[in-house]
Image (cartoon, rainbow, N blue to C red; front, side, top):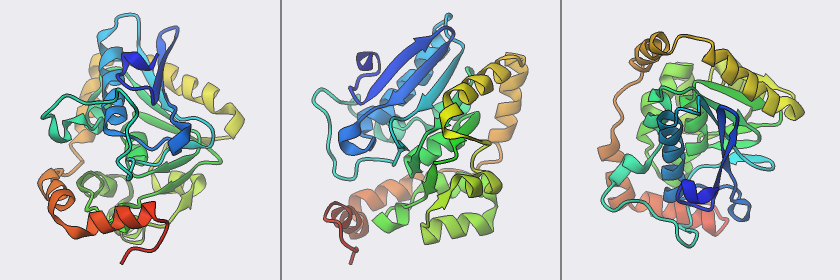
Length: 251
């Protein structure tokens, strides 16, 4: 029921008290449009507002979880976000501050904004086939959210490595570094995600929110001003995105 989330690129499903937000845009390998990012934020809000729902699981389709934003600027017909919303269409803060538990079931390729969704979830459970990358600097984008949050997960030295090299790494390394919490055989991912949600739901909700608030205080300030200035004014993101679409090395 993508209409609940405002975009056909997402499917919202109910399974008892657990809701599933499934990223399902196979024609673009699950690349996230602004409307899809905002739709994930809507899913978080919907679960928190619905007394019949207790937790949200975010997952992908096929061999892709989410590779980040659609660099080609493509949208599906009818997609849109409220005008004048700025960076508030992004779901990362809503995920990390959600009262209802959010579980990321990482089924495959997980990069850029997709990796941030997994990192901000209460528990990220990954398939042993999943792969990861922080590719923003390859596209000329000084990503402020990664700069603020990645060091809290992996330390400054490893954050430098992942951000500045933009290298790919597998699920075993992601687990060792602290980017995700659990790795399971691919065929057991759904069951493992449901188990994680049920485990979190056993804990006291008010106490859990206080613990989440204290954990979130470890993150730095997100410098959206620099990031969005670069996207609007710097020639590097334009060249990086053009090179990506043309399947060549950037200048």
